[in-house]
Image (cartoon, rainbow, N blue to C red; front, side):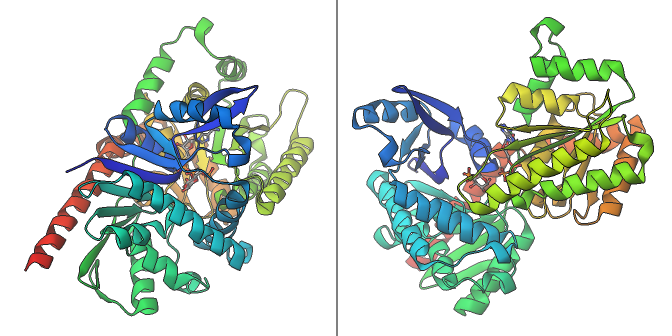
Length: 483
Ligand code: ADP
Ligand code: G6P
């Protein structure tokens, strides 16, 4: 067996150029943070976009850029500003992302951006073809590259190709609205194995294949030409040890070595030991339900006024896809809501919401996870939601309550969390009340079960089971052909 080639739009790092020098900053998002752990422990090659357009890269910096990426086991696909506009901001994030997250009304069907999506997928496929040997394994990731498997298959009929979708696959009724639905399905079917986070996404996909392409589907296998394509679910885990070790180390840090953020959190805790921190961490994305969470917080403060001056909501929102109008509108809405709620409820000694709009270094994420009594993660729709898993992994003394949306893929494996419908404010307010008053022993009993599961099914296990299944599928396929 040859090497593994990982291919995704985002690389583990994003490059930034300032005054002629290059900085590599870690990419945010479940795909990059999860795959980074898998990639660093193997001899895989990772191909993707550097985050800079061709126009932003001065000719003389190209060797330095290649070197910076090579240090992270990565190599880049070059994209022009126009390509990024049509492929990334356009078809990927104005058509597929909203559609697959059930925001049909946000989804734009533009022929130009579809054309660019196809051309850029071909660029990624060419980059693979340039590097791949016949015995290599190609692992393609996510909705930005759904045509790549078929493009590679055309040129290398026998190569092993796996595809994993990190976002939901929507129901047939939603998917059928896409003008290029057959092409997308055919693109994916170039793979030997197609993976989803949960069984629901898998069955939606199978139903679309059956109904739109009329192909023979038996259980979770699709028959196409002389190939058998397997479809399965692999719920993505986290690098559990990394988070639990970081939390243990964090708990042993003397005050003098703590971050400024941690010191501030401590001061507030010390001034009122009964006070509770609610934590909300997401990319600033409409699928994450941040605005609804703010309305629900207001509802909670009105329903349970005894908690005024006792609770604080910490919102960390990472800037994301800010060229897309829906994200700009959402940013404005959240700014206004935070301002209004703080204006309405603040007292001289209490500000109900702390709002950070930025990415944070890993250590600060750990500060927030370990200092928060309640993690409040209520996306309207989310492929998985790794933040929920990370929060649990950092709870070294097993206290803490997770309030999680039932619309997140992770809810399937996290039954011990308080699962809520993100549109039901009454239920959310009551879950917050329950979380505040949950006895410590109950918190620990719930988290113990969650932690054991997360530790066992970590990101390495996830990647291994995908790879094992891909190899087995390829072997079976080869046997069938030779018969
Ligand atoms: P998504 O992939 O949709 O962004 P996930 O919850 O699955 O959502 O993954 C988000 C990832 O990004 C997590 O691994 C989390 O640690 C990381 N992350 C979230 N917020 C921040 C932040 N402010 N700064 C740095 N990393 C963050
Ligand atoms: C989700 C997607 C990833 C994407 C990430 C961050 O996790 O599934 O493919 O990389 O969000 O979004 P961005 O647009 O910044 O890559």
